[in-house]
Length: 249
Image (cartoon, rainbow, N blue to C red; front, side, top):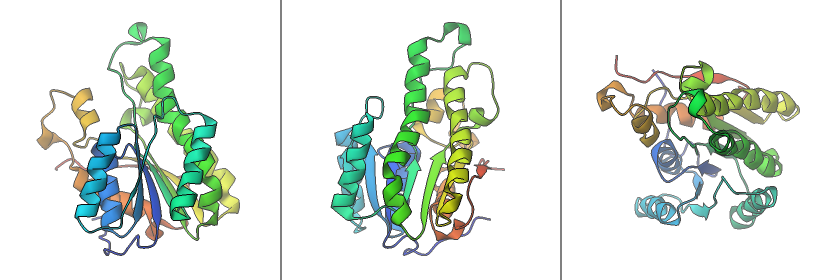
């Protein structure tokens, strides 16, 4: 049974959540704010960001910061500017949750094109690297900082038709191991990969259209795990790949 956390568990912390307008990203942003964090909401859609921003403010939670950014097109300079914006607006950064994800469609390798591979790698693998790199100076200044990469089951266990998407998600496991190894000189800083398994998210609906919602785990059941790896409870644990199965037994 996963532990529960006090409402002030993340109080005083600033947490950046990518893909914050839907699915796991939105649920994570709400959960982090609900446990005291000032959340930096990052997504492409301005309207989507405004909706989640308003939801957090209406609940009387710490006022978030909303920053629109297209991860498919963002350059090194734009990632650096994002880190500067965070420093200027809230002065610190204690965590990142990489929820943003890009998926085309399930198809055999023979039908997949170069641009599909490039775009999925760009958002699923390259953007998490580039964003983390740009924010590293801020993370190193925190007393306790956690970077959580959100993986996908087929990135751990290859299967037919998952080609580009599975390969791009597999890259996160490698990235986490390298980051954790390089960061061992900063014991307050950690990186881990959280693989949620089948959960009720927009992406799961696209990849498994015939699957009943009752066959998947609930996003709410994922949040205690997310909070654990994001906050002080997981201090000292880095370079781990955590695979979950939250489906009803």
